[in-house]
Length: 221
Ligand SMILES: [Zn+2]
Image (cartoon, rainbow, N blue to C red; front, side):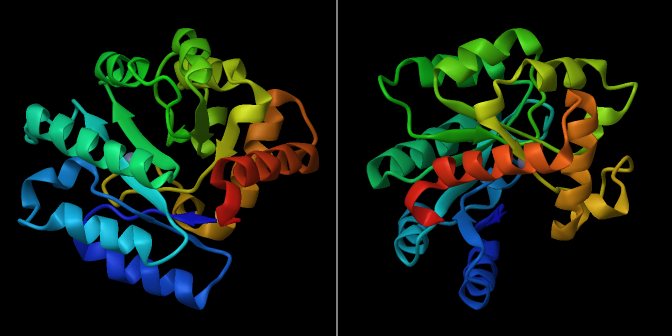
C-alpha cells in the first residue's frame, strides 16, 4: 500500500511507518493546501526524503477549491515537484480539484510523462480518455456507489480497467466519509463497492487493481 504525505512535517512519520512496515510505499510531497507554509530548503529536503528510500512523489497537485491558497504559488510548487519526480524517475500521486485545464495543459507538454495517478478522481468521464492517453491511473474511494454521485460513477465506469486503483482517504472535515474510509483495512470494502458498480466479482477486481498497482509503482513493489 502507498502512504501519502501532505507537507514536510509528515515526511519523517511516513518514512518511519515504511521502515517498520515493508509493505508500505512511502510517498513524499507537498499538497496544494500546504504550499504557503514552506520554508527555504523544502525542495532540497524533499529530494533527500525521496532518495532515502524506495518512494513515490505525493501528494502533489492543484486545487482551485482551496480559495485561500494562492493558485500561482500552487502551480509553482506543483511544477517544481513534478520536475523532481521526472528527474528521479518516481511515480507521482496527484490531487487535482477544479484545475483540470491547468493540469492537462501542463502534462500535454510532456512527451512521456512520469507515471502519475489521480487520487480521488473528480473529473468528468469525458476527460478520462485524454488523461489515460497521457498515462494516467485513476484512483477511487467508496463514494462510487452513492446515488447522488452520478458524475463520479460515470467517470469510474469510463476508466480503462488496466488503469483502476482504489484508496481509503478521509480528511477529518469530510462529513460524508464513512469510518472505514480512513482505515487501510477499509480497502476491502472499497473494492467490494467498486465491484458492485462494475458488476464484477470483488476478487477479480482486486486482482486487476493489484496488477495495476504493481505496474504503477514498478520497482517499488
Ligand atoms: Zn488529496
